[in-house]
Length: 393
Ligand SMILES: Cc1ncc(COP(=O)(O)O)c(C=O)c1O
Image (cartoon, rainbow, N blue to C red; front, side, top):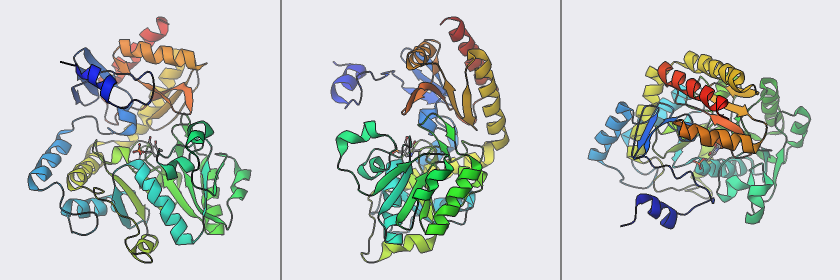
């Protein structure tokens, strides 16, 4: 009989020659366990398990909902209380005067809907995004990706898409009366953790208002507590027209949300009606998990600790490796000299029971993004192992 590993390599579509191919069958808190031992998860499934793995309140919510029903009807036709309660809770928690929610299944799907909404609402075609931005892998999201290497073989993509430089004031002049929407992250994640300059983000918002373009903020990595608040937009003092959540929104289940004002979202209701459809978006079991996750963030995550822990970890990593470290909250990027060194450290870390990663557009930077409730003891373990790795290089 084939082992799971053999089946994985033979029958699961691969997207690189060298998948990590680590095997796990259980995860709890910040730890993952498999046949070859345990591993401290310092990346949270790429900003997904913000409240750790297998949180008992999320498990309970899933179990309770699955015994009632999983799926009844496509999105938007029936009143389903897990969806309704989740919509109210997320509108209140984000607290940015965005009172309407469209639930989908993944990050890239809410990006696709944001693109449609911006075009339909403004009657314009042009989309502006930023260099080194990652917003997903479907055609619309790929069109607003800020990296040519990953796009070029998939052309033609959407026309009228331009990427401009992040944090550069003069480039904002390229946002004009022709622009339907501008999609931005408050901290560019896959660029290797590049925090948006607050004054620049505010100027970006002003420019969008000036020309009537919609400001779309992709909070798929920055949302749900990772920066020390429910949204990075609120922390930065900006007011998106459209705010996107996924990843850490579902507590490990696949669900995403697009938040906007009802007046913006209402363009989906006519000419043509049924302006966006989904079968599984807002699935009841996922919505119940997301609601439990949101409550856990509210009740158990100490946002001040997220910020102090982010500062502490960044300082410690700077001292251990004598390199520069960029961070906001618990999004941390450790800059090594070159890709070879980063890969060597990431591989060594696995031998030392630590899972880290690199960034899509910045492979010489090591990704650190633990669960927001990682214990002090686990942080001590991580730093002890990092010191051992440094002295074993
Ligand atoms: C900032 C950002 N936006 C969008 C996406 C796409 O999300 P998904 O992989 O759920 O489609 C990602 C995924 O990494 C992301 O980091």
